Structure formats: C-alpha cells, structure tokens
Image (cartoon, rainbow, N blue to C red; front, side):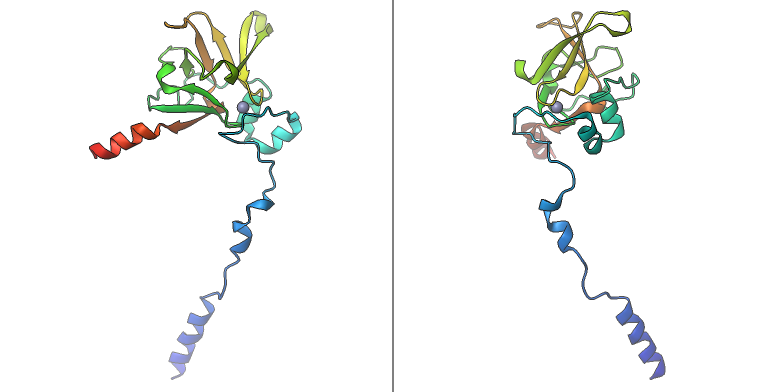
Length: 181
Ligand SMILES: [Zn+2]
C-alpha cells in the first residue's frame, strides 16, 4: 500500500492542472508594429530605429544600411521554384519566378519586376561607380541594383540581395505536384 501511495503522488505531481496558453492566443498584444502585409500597398515611413526593432540584423543591414550580402550565399541564387518573391521587410510583391534567370553574378537575378510601382529607382554614386539602386516601392528597403546587361525582353538585370526576399510558391504549381503524387 505504501508503494502504491508513493506512485500515485508522483503521478499527481507530474501533471500540472492547467497550462497558461491564453496569453499566446491574444494577437492584440504583439510588441512589434505590424508592417508586413501581402495585401496592404500603403507606403510605410518608419525610422531606422523602428526598423531595427522589427527586422532581423542581417535584413536590417541590407534594407536600411544598404549592405550587400556575400555572393553565392543566398538560398535563392540557385532556386527555380514557381512562385512570387516579396519584400522580406514589408510583404510587397517584387518579382515573379518566371522573370528570374541565371546571371552568374552570385545574387538572385530577375529581368522584370511585378509592376512599375513595386520598385523605386535611385542613382547610386558610391564605390566610384554610377549605378541604379533599386528599393522596395512600399517600404524603401534597399534591394540591390539594376544593370543594362540582362536578357530579353527587357535587357535588364535586377541584381537582388536574397536576404531581403521572401518566397511563396505558386498555388497552381503546388496543386499540379499534388496531382502527380
Ligand atoms: Zn518593402
């Protein structure tokens, strides 16, 4: 009897009666400003300090400090899934996979953005060169540069830092894969 009582006690202690899950369910208490949206096209005007609180360090470095990731380091550099590439900072649609091409430059490359409004163009005279910087049309995150040595039909090469890209697979493509399986 004594042994049984001991086991019963142990068992009771190993089962906490309630778990505090209610706090996790409440989305209204998110500490970060909610700027990421795939549907809201309203312009964002946040300070660098505000972005610093929101973005992971490597994204902040590219997007706000106009940094450049090391070539050949992006998972999107050799990546040919069908879908759409979005700004990782704000969710703005930037490029479609059917405009992506293998440029050999070490960064994900595209020949055309989703729309004229999805990208901003700025003259960049740093590093002793005159280049055209491209930024996200919604949040003005630095994305990379555009050059005139791309393939047809545009002849443009958008050389983009993969760190600042988010990818979502095309739903149609996914369905086809499921049917085949
Ligand atoms: Zn953006």
